[in-house]
Length: 338
Image (cartoon, rainbow, N blue to C red; front, side):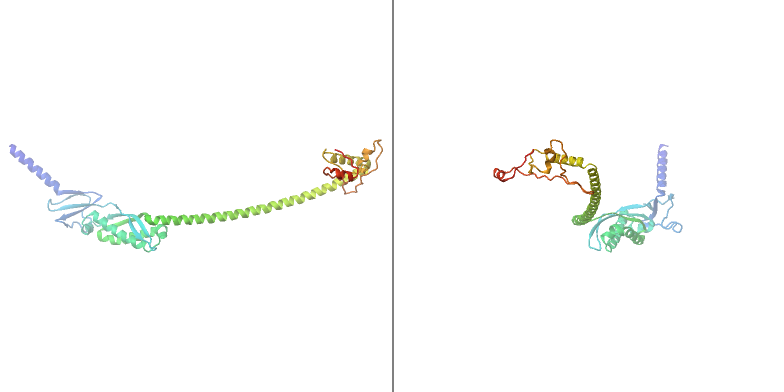
C-alpha cells in the first residue's frame, strides 16, 4: 500500500510538471514566437500577422516546441558618441539616442536571430550612416542651430525604411550633444573671444563718439545761454546806469552845493582809505577846497555840473611808490596824507 501511494504521488507530480510544461502565458507587453527545432511555427498568421499569440494562456508540446518572448514596448538605444565631418571639413563629436520598437516579431527573429544586442548594433550603424550623410552636406552653424530638427526628421524617415527589413520601427532619433574635439575647441573659443572683443571695441568707440557729440552740443548750448545772459545783463546794467545818471543830474540841479559837498566827501573817503598811499597833488588844488575854507564860507564849486544822462566825474587818484632823496629835491612841494 505504501509503495502504491508513492507511485501515485510520483505520477501525479510528473503529470503536474508535464502540464506546466505544456502551457505558457503571454503578457500584454510581450510578443511570443513558437519554435519547432529552431524554426518558427506559423499559427493564426492571417488574423494576427507577425504576432502569433494573443496575450493570455496558450499550450505547447513539451520538448517539441519552444517559445521565445520579446518586449514590444518602446526601447531606447543610447548610441556611442561618434566623429562626423561637416561640409567645412570640421570634425564634430555627436552623441545621439534612438527610440525603437518591434512591429514584426517573425521578421525580427529571422533577421537578427532575436538578439537585442545585434538589433541595436544594426540600428546604430544605420543612424551613424544617416548622420554622416546629413552632416557632410551642412556647415557647423546649420547643424547646430539652423537645420537640426530637419536633420532628425530626414534620418528618422530613412532609418524607418531600412529598419523594416529587421521588423523594427524607428519612433524617434534625437541628438543629445554636439561638441568639438579638444584640439579644435580652444581655437574656436579664441576666435569667438576675439570676435566678441572686436564687437565690444566697436560699441565702446561708438559710445565715446556719441559722448563727445553730446558734450560738444552741451558746451555750445552753454555758451549760447551765457552769451545771451551777458547780453541781457549788459542791457539791464546800461539802463540802470542811465537811470542813475538821470537821478544824479536831477539831484544836482535841485541843490548843487549839497551835491558838490556829497561828491567831495565820497572822493575823500575813497582817497584816504589806506595809510600807505601817497597822494601827489598841489596844495591849492580844488580837491582841498572844503579843507581850506575853515570859516564855513561856501567854496567855489570845483566839481563840474553833470549833464542829464552823464555821471559826475570822480577825482582821479594815483598811487606811487616813495620817491628817492634825489627825486625829493627836484620835485615840487607835496602834501602827504595817510
